[in-house]
Image (cartoon, rainbow, N blue to C red; front, side, top):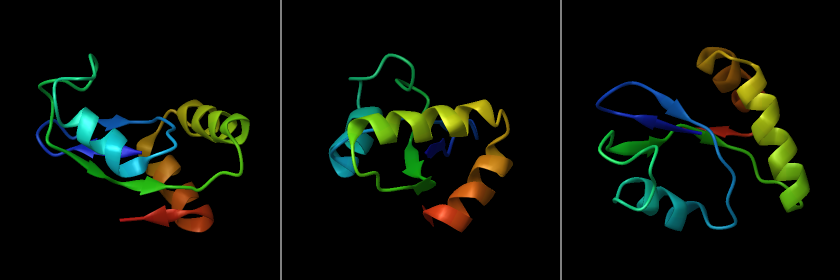
Length: 80
């Protein structure tokens, strides 16, 4: 989960390389996040597999509220 410092919006996603993915969001490589940064890591959970990562991403998105998602990440992952 990343947060835009300019707009305050959050973006949820999964990746196998967190640093590389964050760099791509802060560049022009990602259509949704382009021009809305800078983006900072808000929180993350390490998953055992891609399938598990996708399920976790969908779980956070279904919460529909970044505060709820951040609270869940505090209890189950890592928040910055």
